[in-house]
Structure formats: C-alpha cells, structure tokens
Length: 109
Figure 1: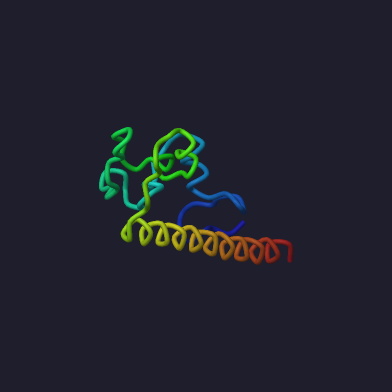
Figure 2: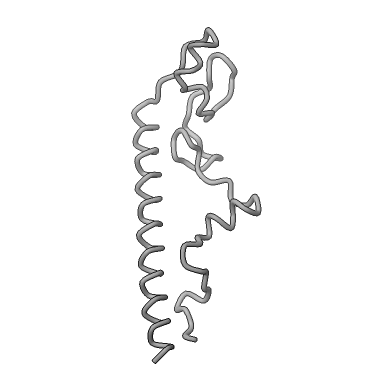
C-alpha cells in the first residue's frame, strides 16, 4: 500500500468535516454570513436579540407575527464564499478518490 503525501489517509468519500461533525468538533462558519463565529458580522435580531441565527431570516417568522430579517450584501458575499469553499472541498475529495483508485489499481498489478 502506498503512502499518502499528506500524512493521512481517509476512506474515499470521508472528509475531515464529517469527522469533526461526528465528534462535535469545529463549529464552522456562521451559517448566515460565512465568517468564523467569533468574527460574525451579522446584525442582532430586533425580535430575539440573537446574532447569526438563520431562523431570524426565515419567511416562516411571518407566521409568528414577526417580520423576517433580510440578508445584507456582506452576508450574501460570505454565503457565496462558503458555498465555493464547499465545492472546492468536494473537488478535492473527488481528486483524492481518483488518486486512491489509481493507487489501488497499481497495488493489484
């Protein structure tokens, strides 16, 4: 079996984020602005006082008699950057999988 150049080897399809989520590790970015939770740029909700809570932006809050908040420009940019980072992670996982398949095929020969 060949050695991974990065010093670790996860099974195909498994990411470090999956491991962190399973063990309650890294909190990750704020779901509303994409920044680290300690650097969250979200405004406080005028109804509940929370910061960075996606429920405060939900149209369902209208049913509770409270108007939903609207995402600002910086939050939308942060959300898009967060999606791009997720897609890059998926691409990296797919590339690692291809490399694993090539190495597995070489091990058989």
